[in-house]
Length: 150
Image (cartoon, helix red, strand yellow):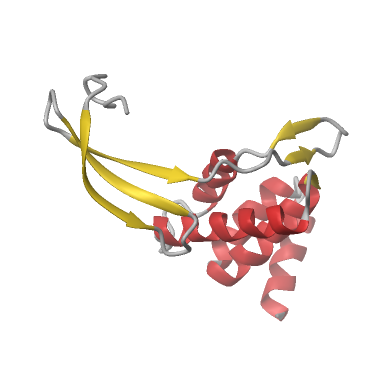
């Protein structure tokens, strides 16, 4: 494993533990050259899952892209990175269980919004505004009113 600081290849594992959901192993490593520590995650290599976009194009499911979008929606909100990572892990596990090869981006977006609504309402509205591409203020207000009525 290459050190992210000095690029050396030699490091030793200081601590190893399974994630909360049991799908990955978190390892704390120490570089033998610069003595700095960093974290790596080890996951089972999954079969490829393809996302079918609105325009019909296809791309491989990218966990990091999903994590970045949800993190952006939760920015400056009282949502921990652990909660976000758990949300993404649960969603990815659910998608891989239900869909063998392809899943629509619309299904992914709707499921993210369901989970975000339970986690943080402001993050939900932020994500929905980008995902649903609100054209005007009325569609934004409509979404907020629906949220208030629940």
